[in-house]
Image (tube, rainbow, N blue to C red; front, side):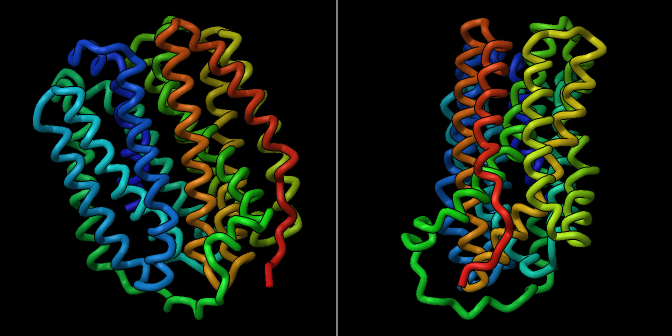
Length: 363
């Protein structure tokens, strides 16, 4: 399921140029496919977390993956921008429900388990960035959507076969409003925003950056850009393992990761050349993956009475951040200023540094 989730995040960005030509629209419009997807995901994340706490993660995961399959099928019908936009919104709803269900299903399993699942999601995203441009000849404009449909269908079946997981927690009287008033959930949301923004959101536009600014071919740009996502496959589980072994490492891990990740984005913005750009992409992926396990596990541990809802809030905040990143980078590329957009993103990531939380339990 996590692999399918990862694919949905980056598949249209990896096909941005072919979709733009086939649909006869600008790159900014193609960026809306990802923006609509992310907005829909963010809107259902918190309700999905509440449903996981009340109904169980397995049921929510099955519903989410079924909607992902429906959205993929809808997107494959015809090369019409409005239809693909609507389909991506449906896929976003399904992904939002399935994503929070996967995280909530592992409630109590610890940072290492969260990191392993997060690594699988990045694997799916990285495969999409690397593979979609190579499928353009065989599948044309449907290259992002046909594999997505196959992965989503497989995820539905696996969700149906999955065990029920841990029983729902005994809920406290804390409302969503009270949860949102607590600064700790916002701090974890800021860390999730870094991890998401520096991997999935950047991954959505890394291929156009490398092809337009660094002169890569579409295939070479896809392979170089996928290093952002493949880097996190290693460090998401590694960061979770380190925090599980030594919980005190969570805060310095977050701080160092943000500083290094922002520096890597800045390097790519300055167009350092064919050798340095892929290296910076790999460094960014490695840095973005390290805080993931500590962030997701920390949010659920801090709010034991409503773990699904708490982690869903952090997911929603990170996705809203990703929406802003994808949309603004789309505007930057549409204006021919993609590198400038990456430079501004580096500053935005650095602004998240003061929010790094020191893990603690609320209540």
